[in-house]
Length: 136
Image 1 (cartoon, rainbow, N blue to C red):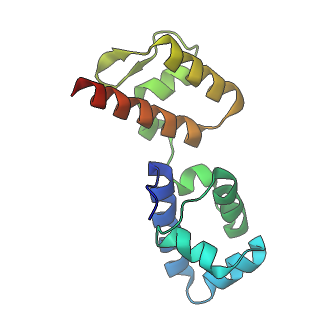
Image 2: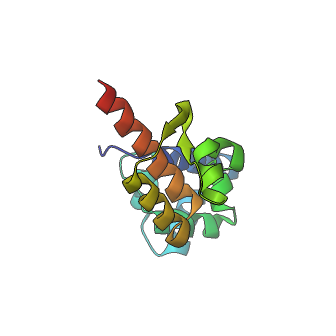
């Protein structure tokens, strides 16, 4: 099984819950709407397969749900760094007060300009993981 990102994990959990709520046939109907097969949808739900952001967004559109809400991205959950990046970009920090490197700041600026909040949250999580690993 692939190692899934936090967003992929949360999406899989939310999709499973949504399919459970909607009942029998949801995966089949979803696969039909997306022009794919049921094993692709089931692979995401069972976390056997990862998913691209484009596919996750298409699934949300087919389910008529908001993508950011579906994966649990909101202003509070994004934390200090994201809130500051969304503002004027000055004195950006991550939990614990660590200052961002120039590379990290450039990545965030690029995401802010070309990406979206869910992608930004994933990148910030990876940065934090890298900082924790470097402390070992």
